[in-house]
Length: 330
Image (cartoon, rainbow, N blue to C red):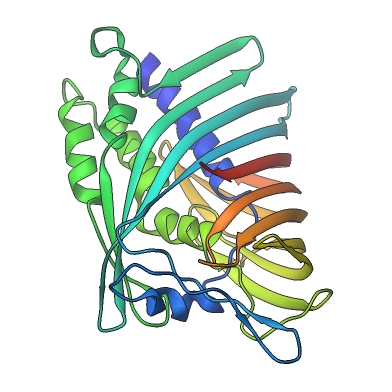
């Protein structure tokens, strides 16, 4: 039972964190992902005659891009009898490697190199680390270790759209092997956790977050561009954002973003067998640095505040969620 309760909180925390991150857009320079060529040489962003810059995304072939990602989230749920506040922090290191570039199609290898979760709820503190020694691991940590060092292979078409993901089933099968007994509820929670950290929607949103924030057209310092995107992992949100190119200096583009977040048609998610329906709205802000030579993310910092209601078994509960996220390239 303790493992199930802990897993439930991990699922909820991942659900909140994954849906509270900065806006992402698959459009724009995504179609240029494969322009780097099989030689592995990145071309610089194109500087046009009028001084505008044309961004494109060209990760070097066979080069590994390793990102440190820290997400801190605080949530306040106003239950009928009392307010319940929880704070969680997820630290991850994710690497991306462009391992194949052929006829306009690319294959990215995505690997979790680190996964550490801290949860504080009232007087209870839970620490879960995939790097815990095997003999000292809890069952939940065994599940996380099945994700760490595992790889997903993601196929992208010339438009930058995800056309296939290989590896999620293998990760889930490894995680399931560590579950003793025939606990159906625990197995369901494990599947939800794997989906939140290595499922199709999470992977697609994560790719958008790391790469696809560049404008469709050439821009100069001070220019802005808009994005309207739908984030589908767990709860579904529509995000309307406005980005601005603040500066171009020493091979780095500095971009800021502001956005409005709204639930997409009363989105819902299944957590520990319970259907959660949400109606939420919020704001976000972001500071982003892009490498002009490759179009790859150098760093990003974002803040999100959303509030609204979560309906569980007919009970409507007011909820406020605040998230800070930092991404940095090693």
